[in-house]
Length: 110
Image 1 (spheres, rainbow, N blue to C red):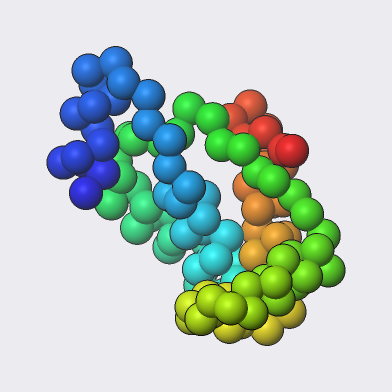
Image 2 (image 1 turned 90 degrees about the vertical axis):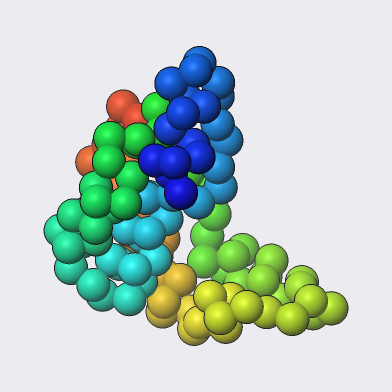
């Protein structure tokens, strides 16, 4: 999808805004699920090639705030990711912090 749909737009000079891409895969699958981060990064390169975001905004909120916001969705059926436990989200947050630390020129914390 990225190579076929997104990359041509980027090549034509368009800006693309996405809420999920390789950073979220690294944080959720690598850190949250415990899959080797090097394997995740290899798979990401296969999937998106060199189409890496110019900038990523990392909105860092506490785990308590994250859980509070999730619980506000009482009228909406939670998806499989939202059904995970507190420890999972703690690992995901640690993953995002790791990414932001290691790619500080590209990832901007808010």
